[in-house]
Image (tube, rainbow, N blue to C red):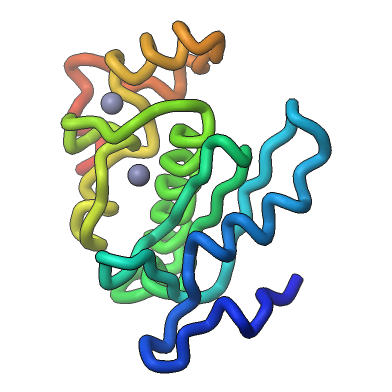
Length: 153
Ligand SMILES: [Zn+2]
Ligand SMILES: [Zn+2]
C-alpha cells in the first residue's frame, strides 16, 4: 500500500511515524487483531531525529521503518534487525514498556549499534509481564540465563 503524501515532511525528508501507524490501523480486522506494517521509508516523531518503529497499543497498530535498518550491514544483518524491531513493536502493542536489560528485545534502541547488540528475545522480566497480560511466550523467544552472550556467535 502507498503511504499518503500528506504524512511526508518535505523539509525533514521523513514520514511522520504517528500518522503512518494511525493510518495502517484501518487494516485491523476487529479488536482481537493487530496490525504490524513494514514500511520502506524513514520516519520520525516530534522530539526525535528518527525512529526505527512505532506502536500505538490502544489502536493495536505498529510500524517498523526499514530505511535506516538497511544501512551498513549485510542482508542477513538487515533481516535480523527487522525481526528485532518487529518483535519490539509487537511487545509494545501487547502492553510492554521499555526494558533496562540491553540484551532484551524490549530495550530502547537509539542507534543501529544498539539494535545489533540486543537479541530478538524477551528477558525473564518482560516474559513475566507478558504472562500477567495473558500472553504466553515460547521458550525459543526467551533469553536463557547463562546464554546471555549467545548473540556473539
Ligand atoms: Zn520501543
Ligand atoms: Zn526485558
